[in-house]
Length: 581
Image: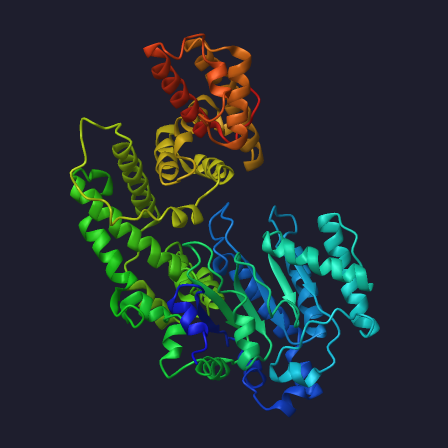
């Protein structure tokens, strides 16, 4: 009889693989982090060593430094994913929770930085030895058996949660169960960024938006697979595997757990490839196909399309769309690797600044030889990537117009059926409007002319899927505003929204007047379209706004389409600006 196991589920694309980082950058604690002996792990001196304040602080700082990278929030405005942190005991949960609060408070001191929303939950565990060797006990809602210190800490953590979400949960039996249910829902809704757990939530809890598990806890066999499996639920194209970052040496335990589910090849099915393989290429055993490495993809991109904006032939547009889509997929995977984060950060490092270089080496745990090897890898500049993204977006828009029959003078002659535009990946790297406005403020201080500033900002806007329609609005704002009088980023954001809301009213009125629309009905339709961020032909709202004309009149359909297209373009330009006409 065949048992359906994780290897089957991965092959059937029901769940994702795991990418496991064995993070061992704390040499003074390496001996305890690699310890496997059950008695030694249960000994009080070992437990105290795991809780050493220097170790707790170093791991906490690593998580804060790498959180956005691991959860795909590296771009301003990107929603990304959230994470869980499995720790070995209530004392560890308390130490980490309080250290995170301290570090985030220090980081936010006088700086407008949005801290991570961190919560914790745990209950009484009767079997400490079971926890020490890595099995996970069944969830237990009994809090009365907790010692006073644990209960006091849990009460304080729930009080923080209540303050954050204006709720009223407590540690009594009913209050705790209600807290558990509410917390589970908020994790699924991504209202919690990082959840610290001891045993709870590590079995049976499913949240597709959770992609990362940090681990400072020994795990083994079924307990390890259950905990890891909190991260590998299918979500969208940006989530290619479950991210596991362990601060203990769980490599052998991971191999042992995985081989329970199959043969020697199981490891290749369940675990993601290494950074080196994704950079240089590898043979995919699941598909029996060779997958090109990032270096080869980038080399072809830069060689074939050094100036993407000059692409004219349809065959070249298709070739570029396929190649840049391949680049986006490779980059999406690699951004989970610390080595790649370091490689990207190196591009903006002033290597002549000795202090900056030393800080860079310390942050990414590198030496001079590592940096020399990294410098040998040809990476496209940020400006080049913006141009590639802009051309990719232009090509997608052009193809959509072709399919809608709007470019009949140049009909398509190429079969595009095998091209998939990676829209989810583009959206995951999307920058928000406030970020663009902040860059205008920064670039204005460096730019000598408005023309130079506008050229830089146009390039940025055109590479943005969600803000392309706002290009003329933002350029008009730059041209009509004395930017030198604006003193900070908050002021430029306020100034832009005031300008944009006036433009919104003016352009809405222009449409109403030029198309002779019924004013009140047209304003209602436009306002409701802005509220939902798109215009719709469904219902009677659009028809009610049109001038009186019989549906049998040949001009009726033409005018309705003209008005709809004007309002749809208007909404695309002004969505997110306001709803008052």
